[in-house]
Image (tube, one colour):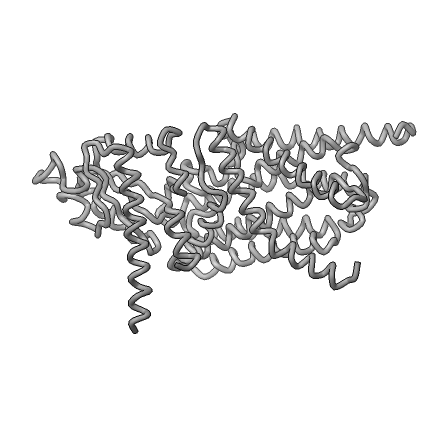
Length: 151
Length: 292
């Protein structure tokens, strides 16, 4: 693992986007930043800027209005990037499933790496989701190394 | 000391400085976390952030943006190199000021309103701290008998004669390290990150490196305040001065909320300048009277 690859795993900057959530999950995300959960010990910082972010943390069932914004935010993030769907609504649409004005979950709009279920998702589950995303990133990096060796 | 040994030491200092500042900022984050009853990130966190940014896919809006980021980095490094080679403080000051201006121009080169707002605020920050810094350097120069850094390192204990200048420089440090109450330009979530908003990946890393060199220069100015013939004592007290300045800045950062840009200018223009002028006036009178 090179220095840059190790740094990627050690320093995930999170962008949080609310696509029409009830704010339950958003409050739990804010709870992660408090001294009790202290996500900064994993190097996680909450950035309000897609151009600085590595992880897109999406809450809410993606309303038709939010769809375009979600796509644009995703495209503005420089790769490598991870997407986490946080909460039942973001995973499947939740209680809003089959409503006329929503897109049944984040993965209908952009590719999702990790799903964090729960209504609302607990702070422990959200932190676990971010760590899961980082583990996946590490695996992808190792796989790409192996492919190079085979070539 | 042979000239080539000195040259090697100077080059080593220039290469080690950004890493030292990064580790210092890592310690700064841990101490801040402990003040807020948190665990905090590892010491190397700032370096991890930097290398991660270097490894991201480059995305830019226009070419001038990158050129201005490069110029910002170049002038910050240039100012620090001049300092390490022991040249004139006033030239170092102007080289460093040119660097900060290129950061502002870079932020103005894109169309984002947040970037423009950040650039405007950055300019106000420069108008706030630059007179204080210049006055402080002038006072150090007059009191130390020379503006050349090599001579100032033989000037003795300036901290005893110029304590208020040291305090005024802490105000400059608070603005330079982007800490509350005067982090008006970057202003975390308020205007996202001000002048840095449209930089991403390796270009953001470039501006970060420039910022570290700027901080290294400010810390370098702090080391001018104490000199002793004993090299070990000298180095330890210099480190202590930097630590004290940073600790005070942290306590101020954690104890205050962000103030408006008008209050920043009022405070630096009143407190900073009055402190330095009062300090120098008292010293001048005492020296004329032959007390010291």
